[in-house]
Image (cartoon, rainbow over all chains, first blue to last red; front, side):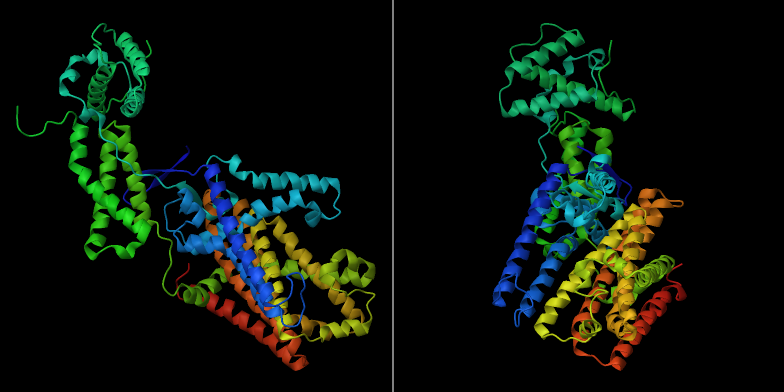
Length: 288
Length: 339
């Protein structure tokens, strides 16, 4: 999951998780469908109110309502995104459902100019390439092959721009200086160290605890949390054996690998946290 | 053994000390996110920033004190969401529209007056070329202007037909449909002129020039029948507004292009973001101008046929925009608001 570092005004660096492409595409599909649904409804009503079929224009009284409907349709299709991102603080309905949000890259406030800019370019990134693919005659007419190829390459670059940069930003995001981030879920899990009884934890020596690093500790944490939800005795057994072999201790496993692992977890974490306080951090295990 | 609880690890004690405040902050955040900031009481509004700063400090400390991945993930999430609640509101000032139209829009346009001049020249060059080419060889008309735009006018149309088109009338309802069609079409042209600026301004140049070409071609056809005055008085009442709007959109596109090519001291990305933001706001104003032009083009043009009235509106609109962008636009500089 890609991250973006944002420095809050208080000087703390927050790590924002960038939304992944699938979620963004999904949110866009939802929004686009909604906007078009409303648009279609309006055109239908406009045509019906004018008592003319929608494709018969220039009639006597139908003009008003149809004209208004066209205008409303245009506004909705183009400004749905702009209006909702402005009103809902960087979210549209689709984004809200999928837990995404638009923020300014440097942490400043989103303002209208940014939101307009990022949405106006969607035409160029999405609809023009789409028209090119589905109905090239509309765009190119009788242009020679060379021109078509050039247009194809150019449009491909524009459309695939999110794949070409490290943050998955569209051109619209680039021009407006914004990013789409995933809104984090909040869930505070109980601390593993607390749930473990004191008595096992002092039975490891410092030398034994200096072998593994933070990465392994957090992997162990993940395994223990999963074990809380469902029995994983085989996995726990194999990990316990591996650790025992590595730290050079045999035979004190007892009948419960989970208790051993928890005791080891607490002791290892204490040791690593102590060393962290004095500035000695080990990210990964020592390779002998 | 003492009666006080013994914590296994220092990080566990740290968590116990602060957990209550985090829970309080979480509850406030969730309430603001789902129901809006209005649901907070006065005390809670005062408490929120305090809790937010406490959470940030907890995060900083936890990063150096604790290796509990669950805790760190939770604090990152809590601080991010609190940050978004406290700072993440999109800026919606009261009276935004009024400030935008009376101050911001003219100033933004005045800011790019160099690009504006260039865009204007490009358009005029297009008109001149179109007119000249069609004058020299009427057959070129078909190459310069599409059938849809020509709407039955061509070098082969009779003078009668051409004159009729300039003075025809329609019912009001037809006109309103016509107006919305024009507006949506023009708005799209303006937005594409803006969007193309991202590509270094080259497509924007082309868009301006080709629009000029079609206008020039048409004018040449009318000139050849000695209907020039009629033609220009037909175009200009709304044309001043419409062409100016397209020129401004083009200038916005060009300014983005210039920033992409010559970012100066800033990183390209930063320069682009700033230019994009200003241009986005400009194009919104342009769309409003085009709405006005569409109304003039449909209702005014087909109901008022007198030369004097048309000339008055053409000159009047030119004078108005000169005042609006020239005077109001430069006010920022004169008042020292803008460097």
